[in-house]
Image (cartoon, rainbow, N blue to C red):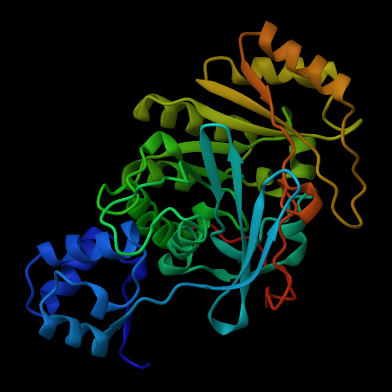
Length: 366
């Protein structure tokens, strides 16, 4: 409806501004945030601690409009993937990965992706558009409801299924920072999802100027898709490296880690015969010296028409041993959700997704 404001993506500042604009006190923002994000209530008439007149007015001028679940698939290993319909006929995918003691939700920030990493299915789809804040946090909102995290009619959360959120789904979140930041602020807000900064992770392919802006606006855990220790190889695997080469990227990561007192996670997909030899491992140790770092080794997950193969387990283990002996914390990530194309690098969201049929040249963020 024309003139109706979707409140789902409004963080605290935006909600307080909205209520001030209609002559209401700032505490209304806290009340509505709790109803929306802690209880999963979308109908203003059900928000019983709001005055009846305010509930009626909100029904006329505002709405709570999350994405629409188009498909809900479960893997044999418990991983769950939702295909979510958005405005304009677009769609994205969101993945939940349950583990003992934690549950990680992998959230998309764009329809498609413009960065075209050579081993990633999403990049092959091309770039459609940035998601709005409501479409980003709406993925968390829907997943929480589907997982039983926010039972209706009860104050607070009696069951927290989602303990961690990673912006590591479809898209490059640093190229959509204006919408990603308010969504992350809701993830962190005690009156919304109440996650700690260490439990919200933003994953980037390396948009260097935006790393500092992230630190200034909403410092959370940072993950970097590195995948190669030398520029020539990373140029091939992660084309944005041609604009922001490894030395420049690592300098930004070092500054981020020091300023936020955190350790940067470096993602490294293991490609058979491409980036998995011991020389690469030793070079990676040299590159990361002086950077508070952890390396996640990711067995390659197959995508259609890909020239790459997964490194054998014994090759991955030898690579990891070199990193450990060089003083670099390293783990090998367990592949999850591969049978439903929900593993790292496999997200496409092609059903009804209107990702652009072209791949525009990358533009520097302004």
